Amino acid sequence: LYFLDGDRLSAQRRMIACSEKEQLPELTMNALLAGPGASTLKRAIPSGTALLDLSMDGKICTVVLSDEFALCDTDRQTAENAVHAIVLTLCSLDAVESVRVQLLSGTELQNCRIDEALSPEADWLQQGS
Image 1: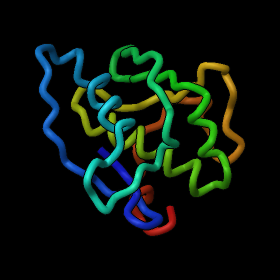
Image 2: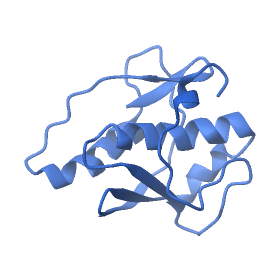
Image 3: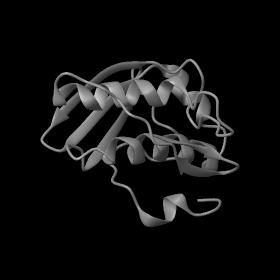
């Protein structure tokens, strides 16, 4: 799971138990939305954001989020950190190579493109990415 450590994303390892492998992306996404717990890390995704749907098409994962997610769209770094936290988290699973983020209303973000499936890039974990 990826959360903010200052202004950059950092991984927090968690064990997520599931009875069927197909459940893992949804359980992982819900763990990300629940936040970092008792940690010095902070959430990159706005509080109150809910996962409304998650589907797999091959190795592409599509997540549909509640419109509260758009609250991250205040500036480029904040929006990118929120989107990148989702992509990095889900792409850490073997079943996922790229992630498509959608909002229930169909709204696009002004400060970060979400109109296509995204895969992690090396510079996402660098300071001020």
